[in-house]
Figure 1 (cartoon, rainbow, N blue to C red):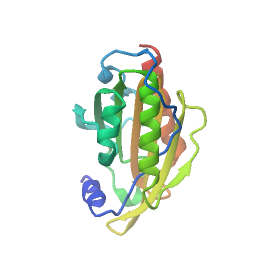
Figure 2 (cartoon, rainbow, N blue to C red):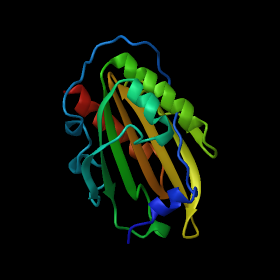
Figure 3 (cartoon, one colour):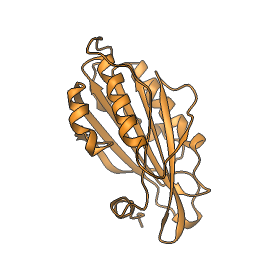
Figure 4 (cartoon, one colour):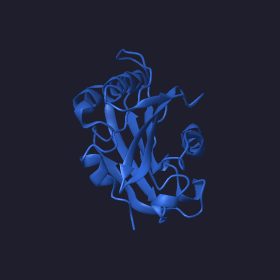
Length: 201
């Protein structure tokens, strides 16, 4: 049975945050202008064979990561964004690794617009309580991750969000799982694989 993460989010049990650097300005050129859906990590690229598609690829709005940042993200030149959600049907209390993975790609009109949007998103999301910044190491053109602890049905839970930029694209990856069973290094290969999809065009 799927863990009721939506309820957890609504109650504020788990709060995610992310921050990444960026630069301002209105210039820059679009270097990656393909369909954002074509860059998303696929089921066959996931690190565990027992994932299934929970929510197929669909368009998402400028508030896909932080609703309060929607206006700023739109002004920074958001063109379109898509997301997909994967899920493992496993007992949460004994699980290892991610139970859910929600991955998104947002395309911006310019590279500098994407960099500015990253800064705006980072400022807004990092202001949320309970987030602990964690280094991703080298990732794309700059990335950052945070972890937030909570509980789901009395079991310790962890939510990790990774946000990174590749040229004029902003990527986000939200992983949720059992506290002690989910680690950042388990999901970074997903981000690396998605970056490779983008670099390959």
